[in-house]
Image 1 (cartoon, rainbow over the protein chains, first blue to last red):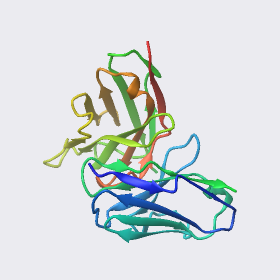
Image 2 (cartoon, rainbow over the protein chains, first blue to last red):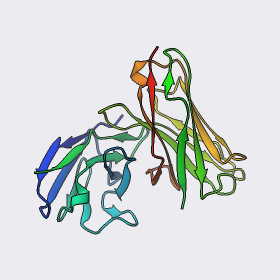
Image 3 (cartoon, helix red, strand yellow):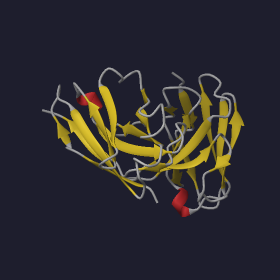
Length: 107
Length: 125
């Protein structure tokens, strides 16, 4: 099973700042990595798939990059609604696995 | 717009079977092949994929299922096209199975495009 490790665990930033979140895979997943956003009491929402493709309806301030074992989710300028927990997920192999999450909180 | 809604008991006793249903609206399960999945999240924990089923009434490999090996011996996911819903059964539950259970769906087996709101299931005597 592929283990995904996210860092940092918590990111404290102010609105308008740039957020950079990392996800590292225990083995190469090519570009088969996605990102989800989860707000308290809500289901996750798909943001990015195949490392860098934005899911329809997702604001352009979200972007993803990376290949192999190292991936990054960037939020160019944080809006108040972006403060949430973010999870990465790989689809390179079964079982599908998720990272442990990065919480982006208001500083 | 495809929408999903989980339903089922919120409390299950240890060693019993957890049974949940996900009702699909805005999409015909029978007429359109799709991937239907269950994912869970223990309190304060990470998301865990349980399994995915591919369902089509007309395509050769309809009913293909993929389960998490860690749960495979206890899990069954099935689709009922006549009721436009799919279900999860997890046998011999323990406290470790306490989690919010989400149903999800997508046109491919890779990502989870649509999610239900989730339902908390607590395993306790």
